[in-house]
Amino acid sequence: MKEYISLKIPKAPEYVSLVRLNSSAVANTMAFDFEEIDDIKIAVAEACNSIISNGEGEDSSIEICYEKGLDYLTIEIKTDANISCKKEETDNPLDQNLSLLIIETIMDEVECISGKSNGVKMTKRIGVDA
Amino acid sequence: MREEAIFLSLYLDKKFDEVRSAWVLVPSGDIDIYSAPEFKKELIGLIDEKDSDVIIDGEKLDYIDSTGLGVLISGLKRIRLNDKTIIIENIKPNISKLFDITGLNKVFVMK
Image 1 (cartoon, rainbow over the protein chains, first blue to last red):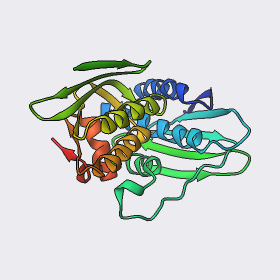
Image 2: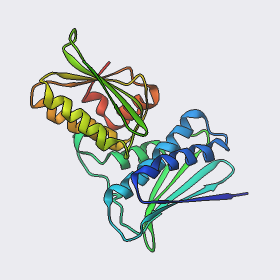
Image 3: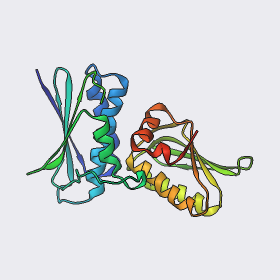
Image 4: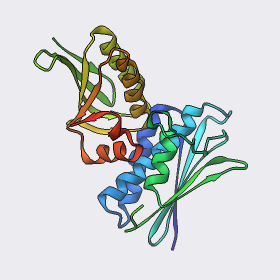
């Protein structure tokens, strides 16, 4: 049976730590290990960072929606602004989009969402190495 | 000389180590999108103040995100102009993992 949790924050840097805390708390209600919980916390925060750093859009909030399944956690981070989901092709670690790289490396599934809201949808499965 | 800078989620202890002839910056807490701008101000300030390496002692650093890593990168680019470098030491496994993921473990001097 799926469960849903939602959080809406102002699109401002001082609230990202709240999102990290909340993400840890949600993941901690599932059978994720310590490292997986940390991955989830980091990835969700990075998605928020991308939205806040982008600075676009009239919507002053970010919505974070958690879907708890039996063995997975899917999180959607959405706003009205466009966020870049395109990985820059570069060999220089100093020039890359760190947020997206981190998210794609530590989460099991990542996809961009666009339409009425834009954002990122990511999934972490219990016991699967990313 | 030892100074302290305090922000809501981050505490910065900084001192010049005469033996190693380098600034030693000891952040305590989180370097994230909120505290990163002030961390950048402090880091760049040190680099501009004295022509020496900067050591970031991560023993008390609990969390760093991409904006924090970006600050370190901008610091590295600036300090390299003086033929100096940034050394990262004593970082926790969860933070070391981020350096590995991003390839920055090959860019910074890691100890």
